[in-house]
Image (cartoon, rainbow, N blue to C red; front, side, top):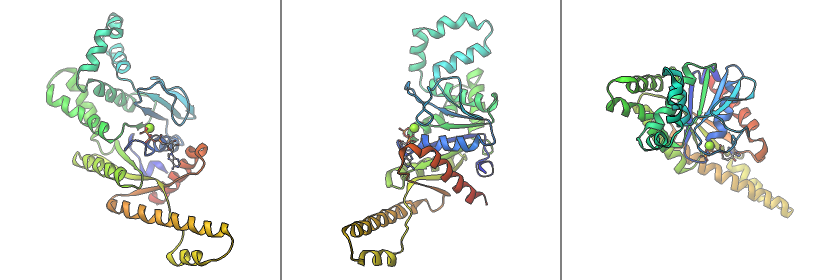
Length: 297
Ligand SMILES: Nc1ncnc2c1ncn2[C@@H]1O[C@H](COP(=O)(O)OP(=O)(O)OP(=O)(O)O)[C@@H](O)[C@H]1O
Ligand SMILES: [Mg+2]
């Protein structure tokens, strides 16, 4: 089902920090892996295990389920791999690439690491066993910088391999049939504003963007009449507090509905808040699948 709604080879998942990007990206990747050989890529610099699959994150993809692998892109490793693949007698550069001078240069040159990371993403999309790449991308601000780095390089470097690579990356990112930016937000003002900003940013560049995954969405379960009837009920203390909880939930649902009204022009997928933190991944897959099916019909 995912293929009819999100058919692109590269799906970039972003949004404000902490809104559920990694959870959504992992669920999208798991759905994709039902039919496509999929790799879920993160840019995390920390040496921590994958937040959803719990495996150590390495540069080389690690299989976590049939047709589903995870990996981490790291700029310096990407450059080393590039040199090994493209340069004759690449062994000659090994000492330099592992040395301090190279690391200092890579860290100081503006946009260099980002360009190398995008280069690795490009290779995964165009020259790897994977037919779909789901990128658990950095939060909005950093992603904007990342998406513009190829263009910035093209403006600064007019010939040579850097120009050539930046051109290929730019073509991939701006190709509406190959790349999509999927937004994630909580139904609250700041997260929605960031999602809208990123949406505008992508639209200005004519990138394929959306839908917006509204995570931790509370559905209004009672009409006003039902709620009033509930609140009129007189009985045990438990009944009174249950009615109060229903009212609080309805109020939250109303606040959320008002908050997402600004996204009227965008397609939305609603994912509920799951009470069992141990089952978020499975529940997220189910909920996303349901939402995608209803959009695909
Ligand atoms: N719908 C949900 N219901 C309940 N818990 C959720 C839901 N979505 C995500 N979570 C939990 O919220 C926490 C943050 O989610 P996640 O790590 O996916 O966010 P993130 O946007 O990737 O964060 P960061 O910006 O730090 O990378 C995780 O513990 C995750 O299990
Ligand atoms: Mg994350």
